[in-house]
Image (tube, rainbow, N blue to C red):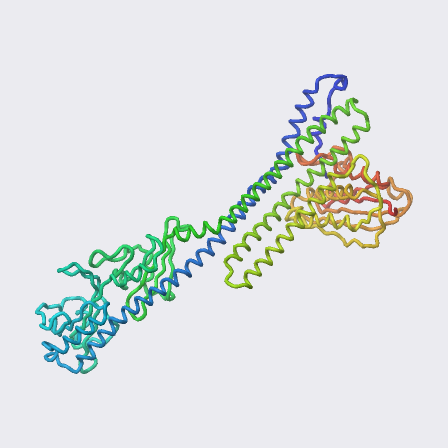
Length: 620
C-alpha cells in the first residue's frame, strides 16, 4: 500500500557505539544518499508541471490572440480597401461620364461634321477644363485619325488605328464597359497617363469603327492610395485583369506594360474562381517571411485593387496583446518553481535530520519518549510527501484558472459591447473565486498540519461530517489525477461524534486516499464510506463490544497477495519502488486508531482491490 522498505533500513542501522561518542559520518552519508534520490522521483513531475503548464497556457493564449489579431486586421484591411475602392470608382466613373457626354454631343453629327468642327473642339476644351482628373479628350475616326480634340481644333494626321485602345472597338462591336489601356509615357514630357476609350456608335447602335478617348494621370489614383497607407511596406495597386499595373503606391509604375509577378499571391484574385467580393491571401507562419494581401474587383470594370499590409503592423499588435499573458505565465512559473524548490529543500532537510535522529534513537542514544516524538515528526513528513504528490493536480487547476483569467481579460479588452465586457468580467470573477477557494483549502489544511501537536494530539469530541467535507473539498479539484474517480457517500449530520484529533484524522484519510490512487496505476474508482456499526465481542480484533464509527476507503486497484497483506501494517514495509513512499501510511493509521480507542481492518484481493476500515468509538 505505502512506504519505502529499503530506504529507512539502510539509513537507520548503525553501530551501537555511536551513542557512546563514536563518529556519525557514516550514518550522515547514508542518509544523504538515500534521501536525495527519492526526492528527485517524488518532485520530478511537480518540477515538470511548474515549467510546462505555464508554457502550454502561454502557447494556447498566443494562438488564440494571434487568430483574433489576424481577424481584426482583415476587417481593417477590408474597410481600407472599401474606402479606396470608392475613391477609385468615382474617378473611373468621371472618365466614363465625360466620354458619354462627348458621345451625346457628337452623336447627331456625321464624321465630316465632326472633323474641323469648332463647337466640338470648344465643348471638349470646356469639359476638360471643368474636370481636373481628365487630361485630354479626343475623337478618332474609323480610319484611325484624330477627328477632334480638346488641345487643338486642327485635326492631327497621326494614325492611331494600331493602338490597343482603338483596336478594342472594331466596327460592328457591341457597346461594353470602358476600356483602359496600360500605362503610357508621353514622348514629349515623359508624363504618365492611361487611356480610357469607348466606341462611337452608328445608327444601328453598334460601333462604327470610331473611338472616343480620354486620358487620366495614374498619380491621381496614387494620391488616393497615399492617404490610407500606414508604413513603407503597406501599399495599394490598381491592376488590369491580366495583372498589368495602372497605379501603385508607395512605389509608382515606372515602365510601360509593367505587370505583377507570375507567382504573386495577388494573381490568385484575378482568376474567375467565384471568390467573394473581397478575398484575403497570406503566406508564412506569423507572417514572419510572408505577406497579408486583400484584393477587390472594381465594380463594372475589368480592374482590381490590391492591398498589401506590412506584416510588422500585425506582429506589433500581437506583441502588445501578448505582453499581459506573457507576464502572467512568467509569474505563475516563478511562483510554482519557488514553491516546489522550497518544499523540496524543506523535505530534504527534514528527512535528513529525522533519519539521523532515528539512528541515534535505535542505538539507545536517546530516550524512548524522544524516539516517539521523532516518529511523529516522520509521520508528519509523510503527510508533506502526500501533499507533494497531489500538488501536480493543484498546479494543473491553478494554471487552468490563470489561463481562463488571462483569456477573458483579453476578451474584455476587445469586447465591442458592454454586455460582452460584463460577460467576460463575470467569468473572471468566477475563476478568481474558485482559485481563492482552492488556495484557502490548501492553506487551512497545511496550517492545521503545521500547528497540530503530534506528540500529544488533542482528543476532543468531533463531528465527523465537517472533517469528511474538508477532505472531499481538498481532493475534489482533480488532485488525485485525471484517471481517478473519488466517490464519497453522503455523510449524515446525525452521526454521533468521535473523540479524535481533527488534523490527525484528515492526515490519515489523505494518506489512505493517496495510497489507494497509487494502487491503481491505470486509474480506477476510490470509495469513501462512513457508517455507524455495532461490533460484538471478539468480532473484530482489538475492539471491545460496542458502537463504532466505521470509515472505509476502498479502491479497485491491483490488490495484495496474502503474504503482502500479512505484513501491510508493519512500519517501513512497502511494495512500492524506492523513492515513492516511506512505509508509514498504514502504520500511522493503525497508531491513530489505537490512540482513539479503536482499530483498523484490512482486506484485499489480488487483481480486485483493497479495503481499509477505521473503527472509532462513538460518543464524547
